[in-house]
Length: 340
Image (cartoon, rainbow, N blue to C red; front, side):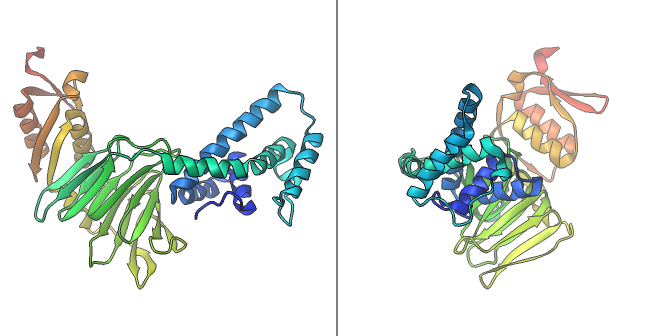
């Protein structure tokens, strides 16, 4: 859903969101909807700032809310910004109603400012990961801590640094996403067929050219919207699968049949920090490897693991970086050879 700045129904939704009047599910769904279009996020952030400014002002000053509302109401009516069915005063309370009205008054100015901000923003520097046919799964840790497993015959593009308002990436092919949770900055994936919005979860996406789009959610919840018709969407939760057929989204139950294990066989890390590599290994092998010091953790490594055991992986890391490992209780500690 694209939020329109002069649509009173949309403004009511924004006011309800900023006033914390939404329940948990309503709020989560609204945030996912907002992530569909970058202009939504811009508009919400602008109005949030206006909301806070009005709140601070009304706290400092002895404002006559009724008089202020009457003046604002007269101006709104003059500019034809009052809906046919006026919002009830008790819904948000007097101060919230004043804030809502002020947001409406400023909407024309905000519309211009938001458009300028979107069109004038600097071009984001993107990095492309191209994985040819028959290659190892390329494992990449993004700036926000999200982990992406890029399958063969796939192209994955991501920004060097995410913007302040969103985390947007692009995929052609197959990838498994383990997204770091950040409710203030939804994660958006653009494919040839669909948009995928998520706050924090783990799921697998197939979006090859000439092949049917498929998404499987292993953990959490995502929203999938058709790219050519964003109004067609589905909420997909853990244990569900969605495919695109005949310009529609068809959802069904999914049981773990081992089809997502593709990412764990032959994994390649390219110029990754040891800390990021260890984090991936710990997740996939349910291990507890720790690094003794920050300097060692920040060392970078390019390495491929081909269906290796945990002990072999640990040995390869130690040989490559001249480290030693020591088991302490249930942990495996990595430290420089000259540390002892």
